Each structure stands twice: as C-alpha cells, then as structure tokens.
Amino acid sequence: MNKPSVWDYIFLTRPILLIPVWAFFLLGNFWAGGKKFQFNKTFYVGLVVYTFLLVVLYVLNQIADKDSDRINQKHLLIAEGYVTVRQAYLVIIISLIVSFGFSVFLPLSIIIFMCISFIFGILYSFVPFKLKAVPFADFLINGIGYGFLNFTLGWLTLKPFSKETVIHSLPYIFAVSAIFVNTTILDIEGDRKFNYITTGVLLGVKNTALLALFLIICSIISGLYNVDYICLIPAVVSLPLFFLAALKGETKYIQLSIRVGGPLLILITGIVFPYFLILSLIIFIFLRIYYRKKFGISYPSLR
Image (cartoon, rainbow, N blue to C red; front, side, top):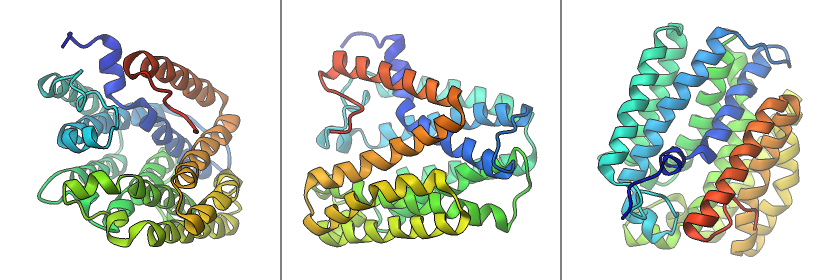
C-alpha cells in the first residue's frame, strides 16, 4: 500500500459530514441573531475548535468501525487500508492540539457544550457503550448531537442558552433523527453480521421507515410552529419520499429520503449565506473527483 497522500488525509476527516455541522452552527447563529448572521470572534474561533474536535470523533469512529465499514462498503479510507490506524492517530493528535489550543479563547458555556458533544461521540462509537448499536439511542444521539448541540453552539456565539434555544432546535432534531433512522435500514445486513441491534435491525424495514415518517412529520409541525422555512421546506419536499419509503419499503425510496432533504437544507442555508454555499460546492466537487479516482464511484450522489 502506498503512503497516503495529502488528499487522503484531508478526506479522512470526512468533510462531507462537516458540511451539515457548519450548516447547523450557522443556523444556530442565524436564529440567535434575529434571522440574520452576526459573526464575531467567538463565532470564528468556535467554528474552528468544533471542526477539529469533530474530526477527532470522525477518525476515531472510522478506527472503531473499520471492519463493519468494509462489509457495508462505506468506502472509507481506514476500512479500505489506504490509511493505517497509526497514521489516523497522528491526525487525531494534531486535531486535538489545534482544538485545545484555540479553546482558551472561548467562553465556558461553549466549551461545556463542546465537551458534551464530544462525550456523545464517544458514547456513540466505542465500547462498552457503543450506542450506535443500541436501538433508538442510535438515532437520538445523532438527532440531539447535530440538531440540538450543534445548533446550540452556533446560538451561544451570540446569546446565552435559554428555553428559546431548545424550541428553535426542535425541527432540526426531528429532521436529523428521521434521516438517520432510515440510514439504519440500509445497514441492516452488515449490522446483523456484527450482532449490532440498531433501530433498523430491531424494528425491521417497514416499522423503521414508519418511525422515520413520524419524525419528519414532527419536524414539519415544529417548523411551522417556529415559522422556520429553512428547515420546513426541505422537510415538506422530502415528506413524499419518506411516505413512499414507509409504504413500499424499497431501497430506492429509502435512499432518496436520506439524500434529498439534507442537501436541500444545505442549499437553502447557502442561499442565506452564499460563502457557505460556495465552500460546500467546492467540497462536493473535490469529493466527486477524489472518489471517482480512488474508488471508481460517484460520491456524493443523489442516485
């Protein structure tokens, strides 16, 4: 195996997962700022610290799941042997140094929520907890982690935590949970081989898809309550796909329910904040080129 390239190390960090992280961070700031972005030093430092902290979790997760990721054909670099575990730990160490180094410039409230987010990541990926293999906990960790904690960190760059923070985060918690519930369906075969009792494994395709449909409806209801069109539009557009996934249980509808709403949320966030859209498009293009050359596949893809 050849020595990893700079591009291998960059894509080891899972930038496709960082895009929604940045989006929720931006949206938290947006709603705290009275429906407009107000960037300050705390915002920029917080975004850098949180990004590198999550890189640590994403790489740790790949190390922990390298065997199941290979079986599930996730095309991740550690699982496929392009980056060794030792090389991955080097990325982790560098990311921790950057994250801890800049965290001294952040208020305590943000540091506390970042620590909670990091703990969630550990509970999700590693034994003896490994909540990603525990039904209901698997999607709740993701829904709360992205939709609430991530959102709240952006909020805290402008305003203190309050009941209002929780209310505004609800549509995102439900939306992320709905999407993740359906991802557990796609991984049922591989998860069973490792005796992972995920939501998909426990409930089966039909009931899991029904749960996802219920959650996306909850996202729509809470989005209407908050008059949050940024989350409401993607949820409404993807609702028919969640309905078809629950009705027919076919892989193509399950995949579409996952792949349509998220990118649409990113697009709408990008319309509100164009620089974010440009960055997301750049990452998307480079990912397509990289995965085409590395694995011969079209990724990311809506197909």
